[in-house]
Length: 115
Length: 115
Image (cartoon, rainbow over all chains, first blue to last red; front, side):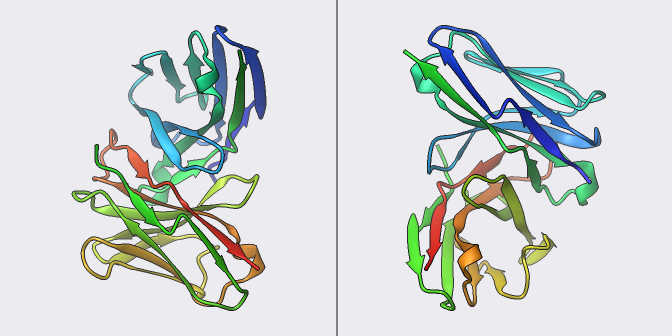
């Protein structure tokens, strides 16, 4: 059974710092991995998607990497800003799900960027 | 930019009452999903829907739950007799196709409070 874990659960950094959020999954048989942002009480905003054949994806100050064989992904945020404060979720689309496209989520990392 | 729309944003209902949560997926998407997030917990998959039928459902999705796409645009989740433990944020998601590079797009959620 696919399990997704995110470490740390919470992170507080001063503005301007570069930071890395971690996501691990137990079964490397995935189609893709998606990173989301969730503001308190709000929906999920897609940030980046990495296909299983890719190693990384970049969008602005965000860079996501994928090491499928070791079951790990990282989300790198450069030059963090207070507006980056949110919960970041990773989710995998697992091959074993019969390709219905369902996502399996980690519990998230809550980031606070202090001015 | 196209988006997934959910209504209502917040619903309060008495235990035992029926509720219907509504979603309008992105218009050219073919695969639809409901997820829920109990406060402080992971986002959990409930059900996937394709070609007017359920393609996969989780253990949570018991006989009290049903989904429907009544008119080609709306996608609804019905809970027949709500319980206190159904209190959660419910998210609708849609996906264009099942390709590896296909992102899932989520709505802003409906916060269901059962009293």
